[in-house]
Amino acid sequence: MFYGDLKFIDILIFGAVAVFLFVRLWRVLGKRTGYEKKHTNTPEVESRKKESFLNTETEKEIPELEENIKELTKAYDIIDNFNHISFIEGAKNAFETIVNLFNEGNKKTLKNLLTEDTYTQFCKAMDLTKGPQNNQILSLEIESVDRVWAEGKKIYVTISYLSKQINNKDENEISKKDIWTFEKRTNSKNPNWLLSST
Image (cartoon, rainbow, N blue to C red; front, side, top):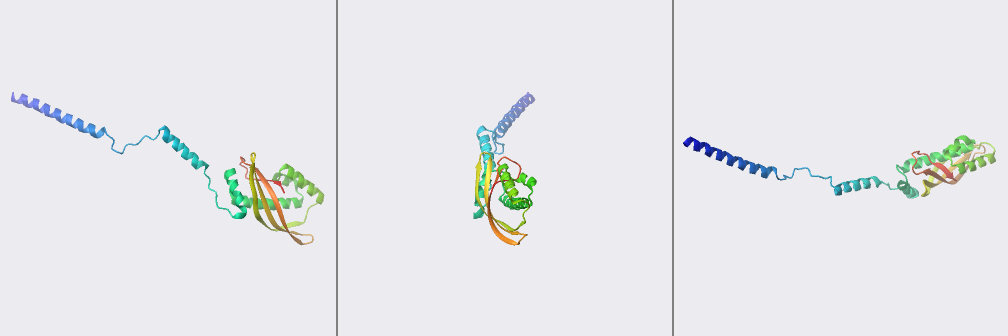
C-alpha cells in the first residue's frame, strides 16, 4: 500500500510540474518579445512607400548656373537627362559646323541640321552668294542663353553667339553677333537639336 501511495504521489507531482512548465512556457512564448518582424504591408504603409518612390522620381537636381545661361534651368524641368555642359558644347559645335557647311555650299549635309523652313532659307542665301564663301571662324563664344520655352511637344532654346571671322580672300577680320534658335522634341532620345531660326 505504501508503494502504491508513492506512485500516486509521484504522478501528482509530475502532473503539477508539467502544468507549471506549460503555464510558464505559454506566458513566455505567447507574448511579443520585441524581436518579431512587424507586418508593414498595410495599405497605409504601401501608400507611403509609393508616394516616397514617386517623389524621388520627380525630384531633379538642377545645378547653379552662371547668370548668362541661367535660362537653361528650365530645360532641366522640360526634358529628361538634360545636361547644360553637353548642350553648350554641342551648341558651339553646331554653330561652327553649320557656318562651315554654309560657306562650302554643302546643302546635302546641312539638311540634317536644320528644320525644313530654315533649310529653305539657307539654300536661297547660298544660291544668292553663287559659290563657296571664304569666311573662316577664328573664335567663338556663347554670350548668353536668351530664352528657353516649351511649345507643344517641342522645346526651344535661343542663343546669342559672338564670333570673330576672317575672309581668307581679302583677310578682313570681322566680329559678328548671331542669334540662333534650336529646337528638339521633348520625348526624343536623339541628342541632336535642329536649328529652327537665325
